[in-house]
Amino acid sequence: MKSRAANDPGKAERELADRIHSAAIHLLRRLRAVDRASGLSAPRLSALSVIVFAGPIRVGDLAEAEQVRPPTISRMVNALEDEGLVTRILDPQDSRAQLLQATAKGRRLLQAGKERRVAQLAGELVELPQRERRVLLRAAGILESISLPQGHPRRQG
Amino acid sequence: MKSRAANDPGKAERELADRIHSAAIHLLRRLRAVDRASGLSAPRLSALSVIVFAGPIRVGDLAEAEQVRPPTISRMVNALEDEGLVTRILDPQDSRAQLLQATAKGRRLLQAGKERRVAQLAGELVELPQRERRVLLRAAGILESISLPQGHPRRQG
DNA sequence: ATATATAGTTAGCTTAGCTAATGAAATCAA
DNA sequence: TTGATTTCATTAGCTAAGCTAACTATATAT
Image (cartoon, rainbow over all chains, first blue to last red; front, side, top):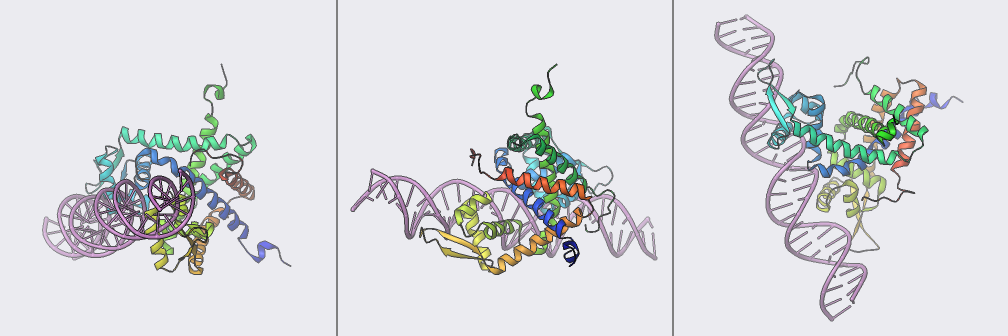
């Protein structure tokens, strides 16, 4: 009889992927609850996050990052602008385009929200033994490394 | 001079929490892209997932799990029912309430979607050395353990 | 028996998603 | 250098997803 891996190639990876996927979903589902305190909806908070960390960014690139169509982002940016969280500057390279930047208020709001999430999670982690925390730290590094496209050219957009 | 931890208690946990949080966000953001193939919107897919894995479940409990208000869920369930993905049965304990159950079609649709996500992630994991995959497997177990409320009574709903 | 609380839906609003069409600038062709 | 085509963003107009307030119906408590 052949080995398990030969009978079902990739089975171990799929089981691992399933576990990681499930853990990530449950983790973020729990943390999402504290975002109510930000006063922003989830889509706006997510868009603001991209603008803060990837900005200055073009409207179309933000739409792609958020996996929505440009008109959706266009209106969200208007709303964020009205709330004084984001400003637009003209793209010096291309005068059809604009670059989106977070304001100081936008950065503060996002930072506060992130700190609430992190504090909530940190409170859960504090009960873990040091050994397990080290495993989680290594895992975070590994997961971040596979999300970077460097080295492996992406084949699906 | 005092130790770092004494100067800033919980700093190590917050750094760890930040890394895990960030890794989970980026992971799920990437995987979300394959959900387009399901033909369902993200909110419906999420609700269906809860019904499949936690069902039979009451409408109000589903609303709480999804962190939305009952009217929002009420209409989503109607839509899922119209598509033949979910059915309602009367709660034998309480005739005001209903229990939601996924149909075979609903379970198949969700299962196919999950397999697409898992296959995508598994494809990324296959490039990792065995040692790192073992770290990820342990991390998944640790993360799942802290999300379980057993032992620690939850204080914030 | 009456009052109160709970489960879910309906009504009506705003926000978030989409496609199609438009305006304006960039790029390509001839 | 014009003219055609592509690209960036917005507008228009629709459906879906979020909310609160108000309602119906059943459960529970007085």
